[in-house]
Image: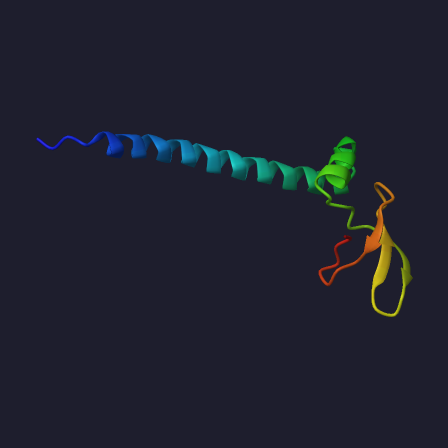
Length: 92
């Protein structure tokens, strides 16, 4: 009869904890993305400070404030943050 050693038993248990961690991480990321999309629609607008101040995900409906010949300057409509627009159209 072949019995697993202590190392093999603990490895299986650790893999379960790792799987649970990864699943929780993916669910949390999915909820953030859904909340961000709903905040753009006007729902969950109370989450806008969380996205702007903590996650640094500013509104994609920004107001362009200027162009210096190289970069487009813009202002977030949600929090008033002023920054630059990158090549993907995001405010940073």
